[in-house]
Amino acid sequence: MTATHDLDLDRWRTLPALQQPSWPDPVALATVYETLSQVPPLVQPGECDTLRSRLADVARGEAFLLQGGDCAETFAANTADGIRGKVRTLLQMAVVLTYGASVPVVKVGRLAGQYAKPRSSDLESGTGLPSYRGDAVNDLNGERTPDPTRMVRAYANSAATMNFMRAMATDGSADLAAVHDWNNDFVLNSPAGDRYQELATDIDRALAFMRACGLDLEKTPQTHGVELWSSHEALLLEYERALTRPDENGRPYDLSAHMVWIGERTRDLDGAHVDLLSKLHNPIGVKLGPTTTPQRAVELCERLDPAMQPGRLTLITRMGAGTVRDVLPAIVQAVEDTRGARSVVWECDPMHGNTFEASSGYKTRRFDDVMDEVKGFFEVHADLGSWAGGVHVELSGDDVTECLGGAQQLTDADLAGRYETACDPRLNTSQALELSFLVAEMLQQRKR
Ligand code: PEP
Ligand code: MN
Image 1 (tube, protein in one colour):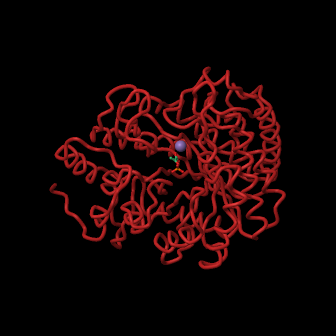
Image 2 (tube, rainbow, N blue to C red):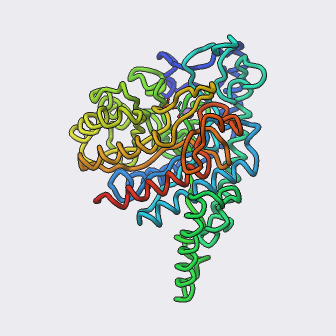
Image 3 (cartoon, rainbow, N blue to C red):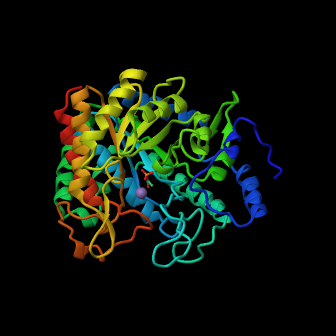
């Protein structure tokens, strides 16, 4: 490998790294690393700093974080319609939260880089094939041997997505005046879609009033354009390291996304992922599952945010609906006692603790369990006086049938209709909108 190694930034190479593919050819991997360390960055350090300051508002209790997108993006589904659908769904959810609960919403996509997946087993049950590890590694429907050149394709797909997201954020299609256009035809006849239409009509009226008062909405940053950030799980260390670049002051940023997070399976305190991410200057997240001890949560905070930088660290709790009320309080208490009140962003991922196999064999989640975990999360934070800062959801901008329930009352028998995820089951647009209406009510009810 000709790329120079920084002793400190490359210390992770000497540590146990879980969930890395068994790349068969080290020379091919080194060539890809070399290529990826020369490509243009997808984001800029200053943008990561701006997101950090937005997240500091969330930590303080002055904003709410909405993070969402696919469990696993795929090259095949990375189409104009696919991206537009997800961005519109995020914008719709954000406007529901902002309008319904009078709180600014920080919008972060699980988008433009979510191409690598941790797996519970190296081999797929049933087929005995190597497990699918995301499009950056192998092919769900084809060759399962890890191929590092797929990381270059993941980069190229992320660049195209980022480019489209940036265009959508500024070309007028994300303006508040376009609020009606974000509703997809297929949600129009769903209860959440109808409710959204009513809200959009209210917003239209408010905008007409503001126009009549002489405000030029096209020239007003609050109504023209939108801030939309990118994020993904920083799983493939070669990829993340290759895209890590110094800013003008020599501070390293992972410029593959604005925000990156460490997954539940790779958050070992002395492991490679925690080591590399502890050195980045991006805002970062870490998933905390139901086995997390309060002490481990505090240790992770110390390791990942030693300087206690506002907005630096988001703790993404994913406990399960039946567990959140029992396990979360001691964790929140320990972190807030040792690090100070409102020193981190608390975000609820109500998806990953609520997955099960339906009798039809599909991996699924119940909408009611998802909502119950969010409710438990709000209850715990209300009891402790901490700030329930955000939600992290897996969603599609399409009319898929992957999660059960919701107002459409999807059943086990419906799952086969449009079960399209490459990994975990996602909320469809109607379910995602319904979730945002329910979260808006929870936000309204709480005291600041
Ligand atoms: C995910 O976010 O898709 C994921 C694998 O989550 P977790 O690390 O919480 O299991
Ligand atoms: Mn997932």
